[in-house]
Amino acid sequence: MYHGMASMGDQSFTEVIRASPRIFVIGVAGDSGSGKTTFTQGVRSLFGEDLVTTITLDDYHRFDREERAARGITPLNPEANRIDRIEEDLAALRTGREIEKPVYLHRTGSFGTPVRFSSRKVLIVEGLHTLFTEHLRSLLDFSIFVDPGKPVKYEWKMRRDVGERGYRREDVEREITEREPDYDRYIAPQKEYAEAVITLRHSKYGADLGIARNVYQVSVSQSRMRHGREEIDLLLDLYSILSLSERDFLLEFTRTDRNGRRMGDLIIDGELSAHVVERLERSIEDQTGVRPIALFRHRDYVTAGDLAQLILCWRIIHRRLLTGEGR
Image 1 (tube, rainbow, N blue to C red):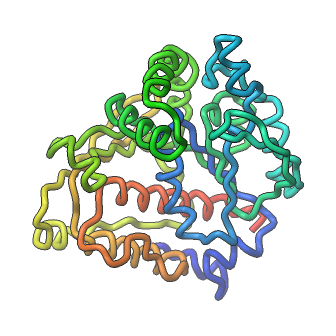
Image 2: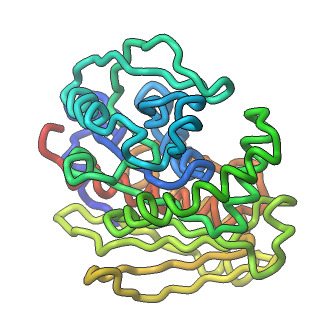
Image 3: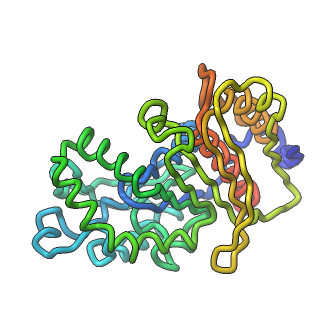
């Protein structure tokens, strides 16, 4: 149980954040269509729109779609992006300054009119190159890399680019093929710098469950947590897991080594009874004073991805409490 609430007086966790001069920056890297926004939705829901701002690094493309095609360069190539401008703007946002943010329009592949932009107390930075340079990484308080397997990424990208953005299927298929070498060269290596890596594969219980019920196998790989006087527990209710679930699920934990870093991998698959997540939500409420936490209300079952969102929220709360200076 977290016993540090007394150090906050009678304020809840969100009240402490609201009163703090500090802007807490969460960086999320991964390929286009990899689910970056999905895995930070829990943070938005938890803290509320009045405390969370999101910036997408697609706005910092150097060339529009037509010019990229003429140059034979993909958006994954760092040369196609104004990374120096990203670094400059993010440094300014961290200090509470306003910036003039560029705007990229996905539907037309062109640039819109720049807008004035400032950050609320929690800033989520999503993009292809969020962890690309040492300077960018130094501007982040917590970092995530989202890494769906190729079959899952293909399925998601088709759904988004064809269904939501109106692209032609054949154009998306060609783009996927053209982008793969740049993904391997420029994007995938960034996972080595992330504090949490979210890996998604089709469920062992059936690939069709992804489209039907958003069920995938999700691995949450995390670096060792820094402990302080303030501890936060994340307790699984074994009774609910064993007695209340009537659908298939898997929970597995392994230790791995990634470039000399000891990582803990929690692998989740299938669907768990909502009672499991409700108990976790109540635990986080008791430990932080954030009420109510009800990310998955009115549901009988939650997916592996849902549980991964909650774990990320817990980890982010833990990190924010440990960065207590400037509260």
